[in-house]
Length: 113
Length: 115
View 1: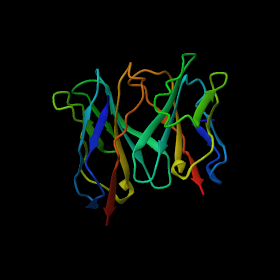
View 2: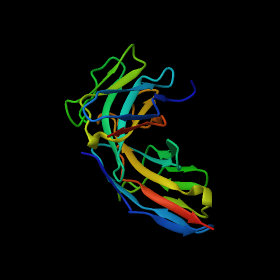
View 3: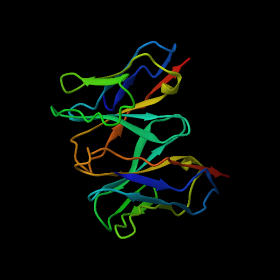
View 4: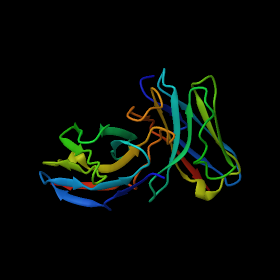
């Protein structure tokens, strides 16, 4: 079956620090890869996605590159802001596997001034 | 509406009672999902509807849980004889079609508390 391993949180950073949240996955077939974000008190929102190997998804200064050889999709941002404080979820989706997202446990990010 | 709509947003129920949670997906979306988010746990897949195909019920935790989707649109998740461990946020999501790569859009969830 499909599974996701994310780095455990909470991750606490100072504003303008560099962020990396590691994500590795196992999946049958050739998945598309997603990062979702959940801000405090809000629902899950798509942050970015990549549908094939070596693709880079990007949004709001965040980036993640689909690395098929290492089955990874690490999330990065060069300079975080307090408003980036949220829980981040990595999720592969495989066609034929029910087209459902398999979520990791999520990584909480706290950004302080 | 513009997004996935869920109701109620909050529900407190007594142990042993039945509850129904409703989801109104984005108009035109053929795929509909239910997930559960428990405190300290990740997001757990429950059930998936795609068009007129038989639903994928592989994530339902017990036979107390069931879901239906009427007319290919609105869905209801029913939990019978609720238990305290059913307390969680129940998230509904939809996408334009059930293909890998299509973005899945989530509602804000129904927070269920069983006392």
